[in-house]
Image (cartoon, rainbow, N blue to C red; front, side, top):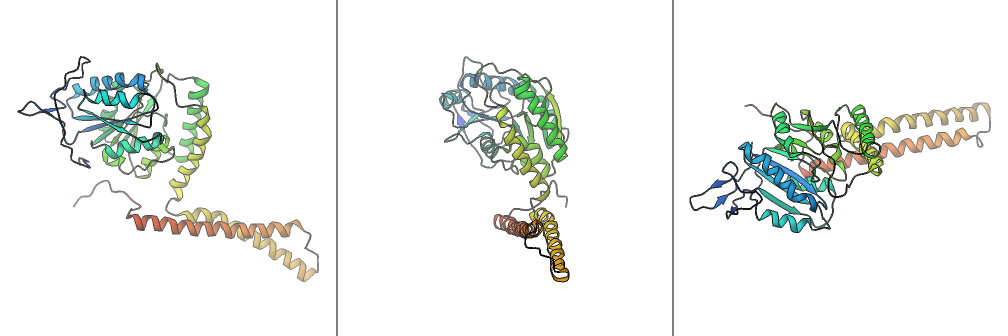
Length: 353
């Protein structure tokens, strides 16, 4: 089903640019009056978050258009400026004047890549959504390949930068280790979680709630909704212009996010089972210890006041009670969230009646 959140009826005067950004009939509908009309519901939405990428923006848009226009399928390009401090917003406004397929979203400040991608998903109207980075390391020539893979029956297709052009110790080695750790811990095994070049079914993106830095775990989040996930090898280029925003310093934050993902995967709708499974045994162990010491005191007359075991038993009992109490509070929060927001704990792929 075509996901048009808001019907857009944009009339754009024909603008002919010397930079080969003219509009063909495949993506623009011509009216009898000579005015070009952008299709209300593009078939494909290309979402690109950018942050301080002014040197790459013009080439980025030109390469995307050069790939997409010959396909004969309607599309839109959504560039989200995530609070850039360089001239990126001004350049995007200028490029927009010559490109009817381009939509520009400028955020008020730097909210992070997850927030920028969420903004792109919220504004995307295509049945197919493609995401990529704005630094030209992802190759737009791979867009038709990843879309073709998606149309084989997948809900999400993840790119795999098999010949990645990044420094080994600061980028590639931590990435390999993180991909293997995430795969072993979650069961969703992919070669390259960090590749931004992905293709999605449009309805799936509406269920992806990204915050913090969870954009790295999009395949895992999609898996929560029962998405069929595929992978395809894509090309990768070394950064030619601009400065990378990634580094080895993010490794620890990835581990913290992985812990959060594991909690979401197993206990998001039943937190009491997590805290109860840990708090219950601790409470029982502490109770057994205290009963044993009570038996020594009452039946054998032994002094137990100075025994470390007495403190250990009390600590285990208190810890168990606290964990179970946290679980009960978490259950109330989860129930309140789902009931007040009207959300369901399931997603439907298809209904046949």
